Amino acid sequence: MTKTLKGIAASDGVAIAKAYLLVQPDLSFSKSAISDVAKETDRLQNAIDKSNAELQQIRDSAAQSLGEEEAQVFDAHMMILSDPEFTGAVKRKITDEHVNAESALDEVSTTFIGMFEAMTDNPYMQERAADVRDVTKRIMAHLLGVELSNPALIHEEVVIVAHDLTPSDTAQLNKKYVKAFVTDIGGRTAHSAIMARTLEIPAIVGAGSVTTDIQADDQIIVDGNNGDIVIKPSADEVTKYQNLAKEYAEQKAEWQKLKNASTETANGVHFELAANIGTPKDLDGVLANGAEAVGLYRTEFLYMDSPELPTEDDQFEAYKAVLEGMKGKPVVVRTMDIGGDKHLPYLPLPEEMNPFLGYRAIRISLDRQDIFRTQLRALIRASAFGQLRIMFPMIATLQEFRSAKAVFEEEKAKLVAAGTKVGEIQLGMMIEIPAAAVLADQFAKEVDFFSIGTNDLIQYTMAADRGNEHVSYLYQPYNPSILRLIKHVIDSAHKEGKWAGMCGEAAGDPIMVPILVGLGLDEFSMSATSILKVRSLMKRLSTEDMAKLTDAALNVSLTNEDNIKLVKDNVK
Ligand SMILES: C=C(OP(=O)(O)O)C(=O)O
Ligand SMILES: [Mg+2]
Figure 1 (cartoon, protein in one colour):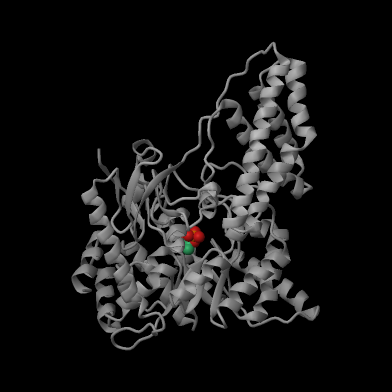
Figure 2: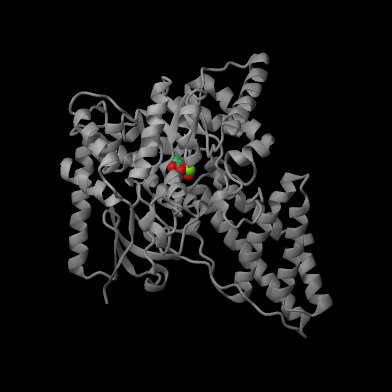
């Protein structure tokens, strides 16, 4: 029987393929006494052998589809499996204490994890805790006879169905086979949704019950343009959506004609359209979509894709690749924004009640200056290869910006003294905390530029979690309160002769773009896949008309909905 679900449309496009359920199996067990020790150790060995064979396969497959670097994490897992200290300890526990393999494995791995995590003076060993956790999960699954999902092993066209996707899950997806994804929870600005737009695959998030309503291998249709998920479609529905997919492809081909065009409004005013990227690999999409700059390089993915802290040289190579790839066009690199929903397996962070209000981004960088200085040095060295702009995430106070800038100046001075070639670097900040937006006039005297991060600015201003579908009604980009903050930021920058950009998802939103044109935003940075659509929209706008519309949006409208209607009525 066909069933249709509705979710939040998170990335455009239409896909039809069979479902791949990416769900965590139940790995619970009970402790029991055993009498046949030989049989139990055999059972353990069998699970270890199976895990080993599976890891070898995953490793080969990951190396082929994702690259050697991504595959290395699985080498670390295999090393643990062949480490007699670890597996020997589990066997000894079974033999000495006559307990079942599951509980012996659990107790030994808990001890090892605790031991590694306690090695605070040796980050390399600390990082091994995450590996032990992963390997234990795999052996446990084989002991219990349940299957772990292994997205790196997918070799046919699928739609991923998950409760939620973490940024690192998303990083493992191979676009060649993964045609779309749908999740139970999440909002349009969750990082998995942003990643889907970068990968140019349709996605629907916050659909409520996909993991229960969809079975593995069910055929499903994902319409990322309007949020519809059709489970087990009829032949007629398949034809209908195939036609929609064709129409969408034709629309894209039309936009593609604007690839080398300048971004100009109907009355000839130019705006800069930039792209957001997560890795140097995303540059292909940036160039294919005719971006005029990179407006946000989220460097945390460099840290998340690596089994340990990336070295200065590794980082230098990545930054240089992006700067060279952009051939002298501006590249805004944001320093590491870890914390919130972005974790590093090798950098254990404290458990927090409110991680989005906690230890994250610049707060970590200023505290862990070893990590911060390494990143800044890599960036400063790379500045010789293009037009680099550095910005700091989650700045709340002037003191934070000044401290970050001071660390930057120190590292730059050291490199210059050592004879390193350094290019001209602009230093800016994200405006994503209301306190900084309100004081933008003060900040504007000290920065070279602002980039407004609406994803966080909206969630903090409205006190509504950006990824929580239960409060998504409060996530209101066009609420006059948000628009007034944005106006103040842009006006403050201009008063001091600085430029203001936006790299939150609102910068590529067809309702927001006319308002931002009216407010005089200088740079719009968005998923590369939105660029040509926005270029086409801007051609139809006049800055004078949009300034009038924006005046009404700020001063007459009372609600988010008023402003949606205002734009829809005035922009055709
Ligand atoms: C661009 C932003 O940063 P991120 O989405 O990475 O938090 C933002 O908050 O708008
Ligand atoms: Mg942010």
